[in-house]
Length: 136
Image (cartoon, one colour):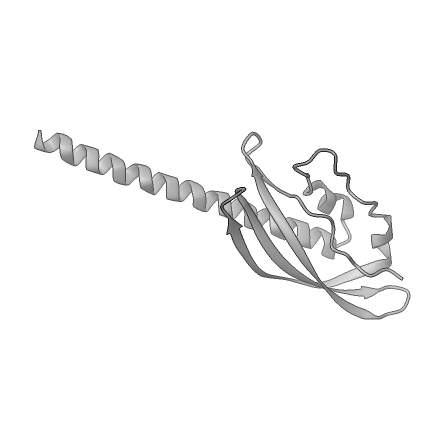
């Protein structure tokens, strides 16, 4: 009887450790997806950046990305992120530095990113539009 109690305690500890590892892996996948999005913008792979965006509301459509070739992203920083337990999303703030190619003007834009995890595909997606780059 005493051994059964210890086995049960051990199983509970192992299951809670597994849940923690699973959550940690999930966050590592988010980190990789965020880097993919920001690097794609930095290196003008706009289709790759757009492939990360999948709205939870299928009625929403991505705005045209044609004008993005008029800017060059020079830097990006992930300022911070906060989980939102209500709808199982993560709200992140990123700061992009960029140059308007024609004028040479330097700008920064803060981009609020809403990331959500699709249980079916086991992937993170961005439920936000592209950053609002100023294109003159």
